[in-house]
Length: 115
Length: 114
Image 1 (cartoon, helix red, strand yellow):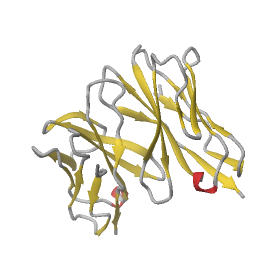
Image 2 (spheres, chains in turn purple, orange; image 1 turned 90 degrees about the horizontal axis):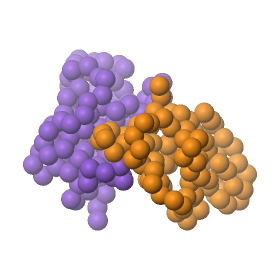
Image 3 (cartoon, helix red, strand yellow; image 1 turned 90 degrees about the vertical axis):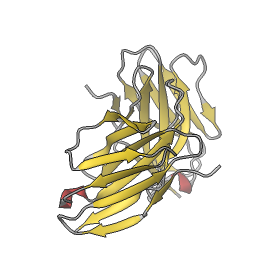
Image 4 (cartoon, one colour; image 1 turned 120 degrees about the vertical axis):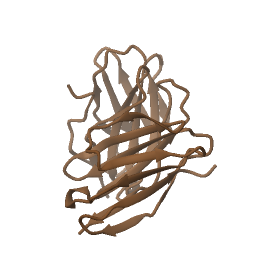
């Protein structure tokens, strides 16, 4: 079974631009979560989508948004990029069964650099 | 309060030796899951091992075992017979039954010395 895929793997943008990252979950997984990872802040939860609905949201400004499609693929968008948005963006998928046993499986990440 | 605490920012271990990475957690939910992930320098988070709050025995997966002490709310990862390829960041995480969010610790950087 194929793992979580993320595209693109690397991205360079300039301040003020916007960017869209894509995530395809493991087949059969319906929940997709996004995380931002930086050396200073560590791993921070952005949001989770399940059945095309945002179910949980982290403490990020409205410039960060996402969506999920009927095939469970998810995109996240960052508008008006700032230098501080440079980070590794990780996507994770899970079934979920609604139990604490649900394991999240991660993709390889998209490394975004904002100049 | 932090949901997951990893107090060891960096650890060193000699090749072929065992190492324990510490993790404590905080929850009032009686049903929860505990997870460990490995993140090599490539960036991808790799799932290693899972322990359920109601599991009577400590989880094991190959060279990985989880030392689960429920009363102390600790879930330490033990890596036996360390290999050079074990050098990576290790994250402890928890998922409560009442919510859908994963909580991650700040990670421990493990370096295996030849």
